[in-house]
Image (cartoon, rainbow, N blue to C red):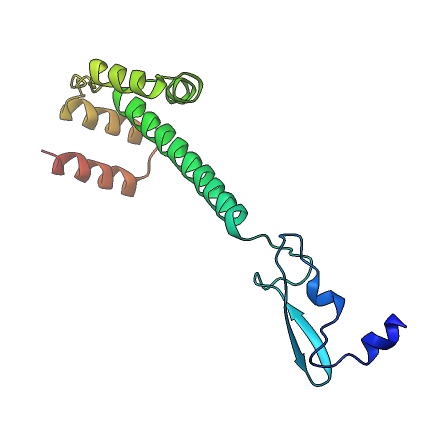
Length: 164
């Protein structure tokens, strides 16, 4: 008998499905159109309520934002510590380990790099070169031994003399 009533229900008699809540506890909005009742839920995800919404969706959004900001902050701290260590001539691996594994590692790397200062590269002492006469004698010796051709000898001799 109930099925008969549902089959003949009209615009004034909504069926039982119009009074069932979804997983979020939302009641549907039922409309009668074309001889049939259709229901829709406020979240727009149908009777199952899939997709969440409301506070749950905001919580997930804030959680994802917090994770992304945490990862971005960690990457910034590590790359900055590595740069400070490199510029101060310190170990980049140690700076990375200190930044990640200790509570004050980033600050410690900052202080150490500033206390250490920039590495100074010693100015190399000029290496005593051979004199022009010695170079020409060696070139003549190589020509006499047949190790360089006449053209190579003339080209090298010209290059040596042009340096004067």
